Length: 368
Ligand code: KG4
Ligand code: ZN
Image (cartoon, rainbow, N blue to C red; front, side, top):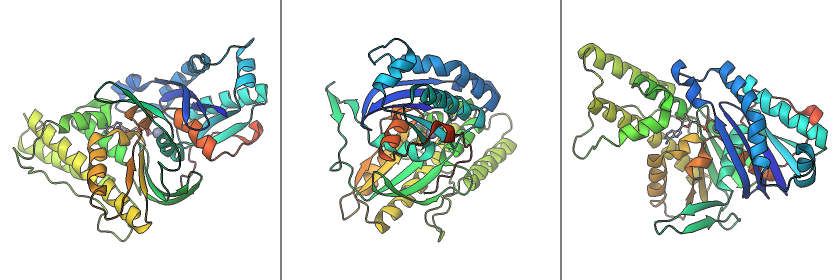
């Protein structure tokens, strides 16, 4: 079954074709990230305009892998079994571009259309086969089957707008366990990055800067809180307090040393402690859920899942368990927004609707 998926929830315009939920036939992503750089955050109006100008070229590029018929609609009608599209959550202007394009394609081709929840979809990046190059330059392909992803699994989705924990009993049986009460982990990375002068580069910049701090040579004097680890509310997260603690710290540093507060050393130190605090909380809470639900796998996904420190901490911490738990995270290119996982999610949670009944839903709930 070939699914063509469209993703346009924020600043990425993406289209992909995936076979049987696992084989990537085509994957195209365009991003307007750089255009937002000078505004210190995503400008929704600008993001929507860029979606409009990118959507058709991105779809055309994606379709190049298919045998070409008389026209685009005939190519879709002949070779695509379903169209999947992100309907929310996300920015309304951006979502509308993808949803209306997908609806029109479904109407003109009579191909079934499947609405997809962007946040739930992230975790299906763990289900697709992908090529990995090992140290000897050999390509190894990871195959999906039920023997590799063992259930029950605990799935942590960490992106720019969401930090959500799910129990997954099978590829299509999900229960939401908890999520962030305020800021998401990615948001905390992004806001700290801006505070430290990295513009919109977010978590990637923090991760890079953190590598310059070596606690074994220079013990950490900066200590940030690990929010909500001691709460009864075990599956909920809160990152806004952590963000405020970082703001306070930077303000105090600037008051004490107005001319040279943020030296390269201090920036590295702060970035390191921010990354440590965020990853400590994410790993600890996920492990609590894994233990309680006797999980056989932990699945990490979302943009923040690209973070190497987070992956290393998960790998190290599951070794301490008495029972065997497998940790999986997609390759970094499939962690950030793309349409591959939208197609895969549509395959596993298949719920086609009429093109007349599909609409962009910016505040779509992530609780299932
Ligand atoms: O999933 P995503 O591409 O978009 C949303 O759905 O939000 O996630 C974007 C988030 C941003 O907050 C970005 O800073 C973060 O993922 N991110 C990272 C890394 N790469 C992307 N955070 C930490 N370390 C990284 N290497
Ligand atoms: Zn996302």
